[in-house]
Image 1 (cartoon, one colour):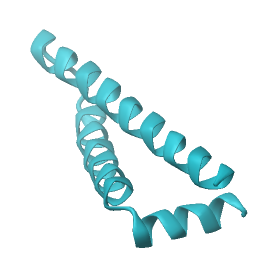
Image 2 (spheres, helix red, strand yellow; image 1 turned 135 degrees about the vertical axis):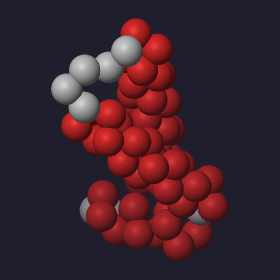
Image 3 (cartoon, one colour; image 1 turned 135 degrees about the horizontal axis):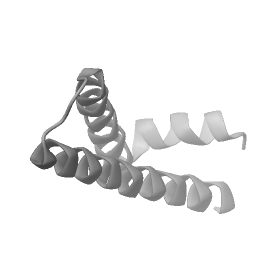
Image 4 (spheres, helix red, strand yellow; image 1 turned 180 degrees about the horizontal axis):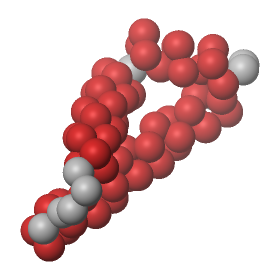
Length: 72
C-alpha cells in the first residue's frame, strides 16, 4: 500500500490515529500562533517547547501506526 492509502485507511478505521491527527493539528495551530509573536516571555518559550515536544510525540506515534499498517 502507498502511504496515502495507509493514512486514509487509518483515518477511516483507527480511532487512535484520528485522535492523534486532530491533536497534532491543534498543536500546530497553537505553535503557529505563538510563532507570530515577536517576543515570548520565558514561560511562553517553555510552553512553546512543550508544544513542540508533544507535537513530535504525536507525529512519531502516527508514523509508527503507518509503519505497522504497511507491514500488516
